[in-house]
Length: 232
Image (cartoon, rainbow, N blue to C red; front, top):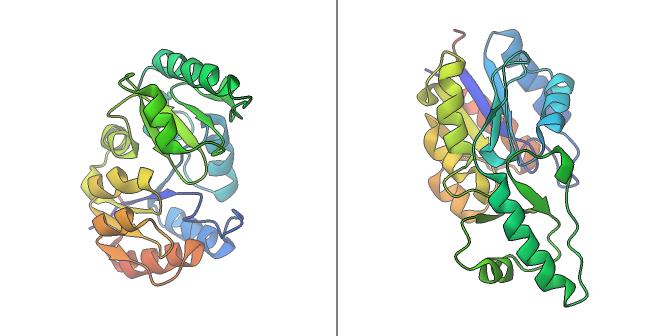
């Protein structure tokens, strides 16, 4: 029995141009109207996640910064996982290296991030990992940005911590995603599903992979498990 839905945003409920699929939004709202908890998950900032939760029409719970920040409902207190100070030190190392090459990293919303740091995919991710060597950070390539984050933090660890605050267990969630940073989320949930455009490694851990891509694939996956949802 499923009591909640956890979904990635970019590449999962959007189309290839990052516009939100309206059919996906309608399906999410239908679940919310039936009393099913819907949680949005992303590498984006908490303020972005609060805004999009309101616009999509969920109950306000979200996972932000790839698991570094999560919140239960609109009135819940944001919980933080990770050490941003170490991410800043790693970023300084990268900036020093690339400035010597005449390159400047394009940071994404650094003043609005609490745990991780993110920048544009204008440099090779494997080169970034090589430059940082054994510094205590993990480097995530989400397909939309490169993130620096504390080791061991991901959307799956956030789900495990968030679920009890919602009166749920991770096993009661259907999780849907597409990127490498969704793998632990799919593994932690009771059922993990991937859209057709998902990374091969993400598809490999999913119990179901949709035939359709992006938002249409999300709708396909959720509808497959729709009969298993029960309100709390």
